[in-house]
Image (cartoon, rainbow, N blue to C red; front, side):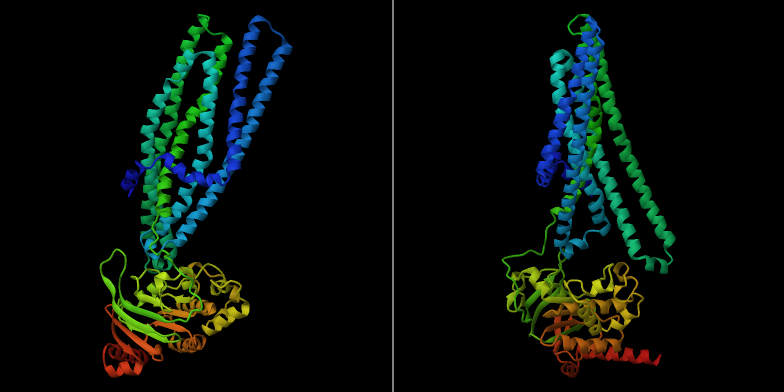
Amino acid sequence: MIASLLETHRRTSILEMMRYLWPYMMRYKKKVFFGFLFIGLSNFIGIVPPAIVKNAIDYIKDTVEINQLLKFAGLIIVFTALSGFFRFLMRRTVIVVSRLVENDLRNALFKKLQSLDRNWYQHNNTGDIMSRLTNDLNAIRAVLGPGVMYTVNLVTMFIFVTVMMFNISPLMTLIALLPVPVMGIVVNRIGAVIHKRYLAVQEQFARISTKAQENLSGMRIIKSYVLEDSELNHFNELNDDYIKKNMAHARVQAAFQPSMMLIVGIGSALILLFGGKLIISGVITLGDFVAFTLYMGMLIWPSIALGWVMGIFLQGTAAFKRLQGIYNANVDIEERDSQLLEKVDGKIQFMNLTFSYPQTDLNVLNDIQLDIHSGEIIAVVGRTGAGKSSLMHLLTREFDAPAKSVFVDGRDILDIELESLRAAIGYIPQDTFLFSETIRDNIAFGVNGASNEEIEWAAKMAQIHDSILDLPDGYDTMLGERGINVSGGQKQRLAIARAILKQPRILLLDDALSAVDTITEEAILNNLREVMKGKTCLWVSHRISSIKGADKIIVLEQGKIEEQGTHEDLLLNNGLYANLYEKQKLEETLELTE
């Protein structure tokens, strides 16, 4: 992973990163303009005090007047204060811009994450995504804040100071600039190592984040298997590797600044040697030499900071490449010349549907031919892996079916505007998800402005109302992460209430009652038949006893329709459905006798 990112980095420069980020900065062009202006004014005013010192020293050689010296001192204080004031404004504007751009980037990143399909999330860990949302965005913010600010500061100061130094002595200026190429070599060599080691640090941090996230989500399983010590040891190993990689990065980063200081120190020593000779020979005055030395001093900190700034930019490019992995991710579920799905009737057709998931060659559905009329309740049964859930995934466009194989109201599902398609569908997946919000907010999720009466009605239809009232805070009870403080059956019933409240034209239930007892299940099904009267319902279930009343039952086997018909018709066929039904009846009988 790191090697491939490094290879890509050879084609990705700091300029490429800045070209991408520049439009975001231009949203705040007034602040950027004034920030750069304040940098220029601060440095322009900052070059005046050394010139005043030069005049003061040369003046002292001839005569000493206290009033004149006080004037010199006063001017130095005024110009220094002005320079400091503009430097304060510089920080206030540029740093604010970096925070604003960080906010925009985070929003853009989150919007992109919302658009990515299920296939992308199956290949990217949550911990790694969170690492990019935090650490990598912080690195980009550092580029746009201190990175840009000190770079512009160094460039403008270098120009102003070099001009002033050149006016004093062109020869001394050339000598002072001799270390600059050496700085470039050091930056290039050490910078490449910093970039490589920073990538290693971020990759390891992503592993730690993933491990922590998995442990927090699966804490009940870890405790039930008494694996706390094992997981702690594994986390410690990851953390130790993170420290080692951080220390390796810190060692190289730490060598950067002393290297700059050494090069600057050599330049200062050369100036002292040659400057002294020029004073003795009368080419320059003592005031010239002192002013030149002060100008050199003004370049020392920016030169030393160059190593730190380059480190920021190199870390930024590494972070930028990781963020580009999200920004440039392909969206497999794309809108074509789509049209809104209005006045939904609810007719569904599967025509010669053959489908395999991305990155696989195995067909999970083969030549499916099925017509579902508006208002029908269609049940789908079959063994595990028969392809039942895949039908749901294609109808909600979690994955795209081949063209002209899935139709809703006579229109190819790929030609229907995605948002309007999903707005017409109520979907209850196998893996029920609840948010860390109140029960009320979880039921009302996706229905803006739902009243308390509507929420309670949906809960009653899902047979969860009484259970909610038994809780201390009722509908205002806060749920833990993924609904950890409610049972599996309660989770499913809350998810059903959420779908019922939406009152969709098409309802998809993917084994949505597997954790509910048979008595409660029957009550929910009776309510659903009433709620979904005149609407289409496609219902996947492993429990055959609950689907006997469906208008049509589809039996899938290895991705193909093995049988279809009513419950009575399929029993008379004495095929796979009848076999499954008899097995389940036997299992239920054995459970009752135990």
